[in-house]
Length: 453
Ligand code: PLP
Image 1: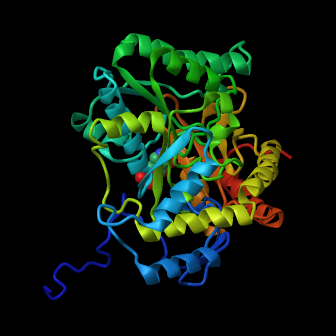
Image 2 (image 1 turned 90 degrees about the vertical axis):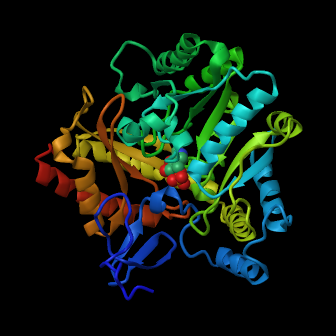
Image 3 (image 1 turned 180 degrees about the vertical axis):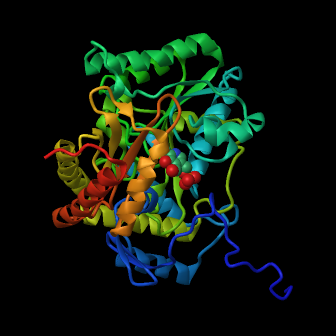
């Protein structure tokens, strides 16, 4: 020990220098700092804590597992918790999804999908396929493979020499369009951009298309018109392109179904990436779920050349299993659908008083409101107002945590995500809305935004 020579006020660093108060404890939808202040966790952390904080049954299950073993390496032992979690997960998946590969987070999950897709192509005599088309804006993770398909130029820029350039098509931001098309027509128009990109790249070089079925922070809960999903499926089939759904944020019940993709059964993917709500913050956990028709050729050709040390460890698996038990016991996915409808209606209702809310969108409890200068044209607020960050800070000071971004890439705009744990009650929705309404009023006063009656 070098007598404190490296000691600073904090030795930790994250993305930026800004600091928040030290957390103390959390329970249900609430979280407390050490100074006694309490917040409603209106973003479930980073859309992670789907089952709510401090769930006693999950903690007990983890404790039982911890007392047996926290870690046993998968090359040395099978473990029941991972086996059981894989089985439970497959029971919740659409037909045909019968193979699970565990990881510890979202970037690992999307990266695994890309690598399995590539090995499948090689194993099945399609080695010329390597391009993964994605959308902009989008977010698929921060590791180099996941970042290569992320549509967020500023985040990727310094690393671009380290990554293969991957083709991007516009995300289906139909709510911004002011054309004569119907929503269905717009959905098809955006999906057809995928076909155009596949043709332009050369279909024999295209490996996969990755998309968030309901968008996350990059787009503010973007939902495409219904027509988009089956058309994307059809196009992928036509050109032999694998369809990857990144359900890292939208999965595990968040949208009122186990998968967001379950809202569009005729747009089913080939591979699914899950994380966040799967471990619900109790343990780092993620998964790639795949059909055996994709996994089997890879295993037969010598095995999947990929894997993380912590993958499928007994503790994370026991936590995941208990999370799924609790989700089912508390009908949390049903509650997400019900409370999502209540919350969406309440957010929609704010438009009259705050005409700078240009759009409310999402599914279940993955909801967002877009803040604009003009709801008629959807012209964004000037970036210099920093509206999204001001709203987060104002709400934070009043005891509400929300997640907010200015989308950059394709188009610009401020949005705020409202994504409480799936256990929220109607009374708690009202409590959240009271603080959010007050915060929007303060934001309007501060930035001189118009306010209605
Ligand atoms: N994919 C999506 C849709 C996400 O929202 C995220 C994280 O926010 C990721 C991937 C990356 O997950 P992680 O931060 O756990 O690596």
